[in-house]
Length: 127
Image (cartoon, rainbow, N blue to C red; front, side, top):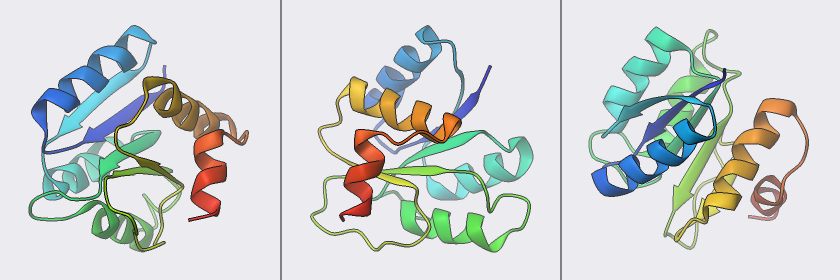
């Protein structure tokens, strides 16, 4: 069973994504800010991190930078979710724009776990 860390300060969205991912068979960890997410990454080494771009304390891109700077977490794929038009390309593996469809989220996570390309990963290359 793959472990996914969801990091988002929108608790309603966090719960919705958590419910869907658990139904799909994933073990789900959650964080409501980037600082807490980094602590969980360091302790749990999830298989994939899904993070909102705009969060308190540490944003999603800074979370990616910190993960990439740590040898133990550098290889963990990261999906950044954003409502912004432009997000710095700094360490994330896939980029999804809000509103995020469940099918796109699942596709991105599964493709990162298997190494197969997904629509989300292809979109992120063009960002």
